[in-house]
Image (cartoon, rainbow, N blue to C red; front, side, top):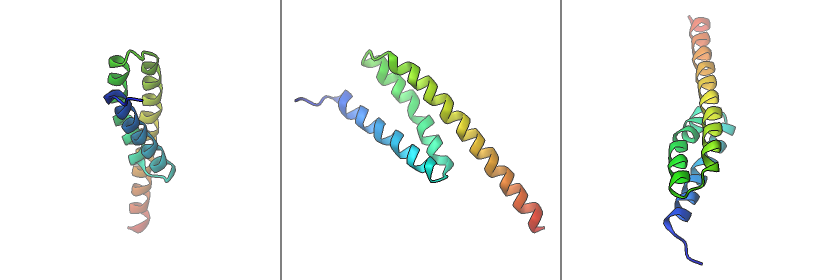
Length: 88
């Protein structure tokens, strides 16, 4: 079996996506940011390899990653503000 560049890139992208999910599962907003950041690369991969169905998943995953990133960052900001008001 021959492994081409597309094979290795798909493994790297999958590893990045899994890393993002693990971090998000640990309560780290950076996990959602990693997942979101990888979506344009997945989209380019889909176009180059003619795997156009992946474009739909990129859009869907990107939307979920963006929503969760914004939600988690807003929550963290609100908690920081709450901590400041209770300390002072």
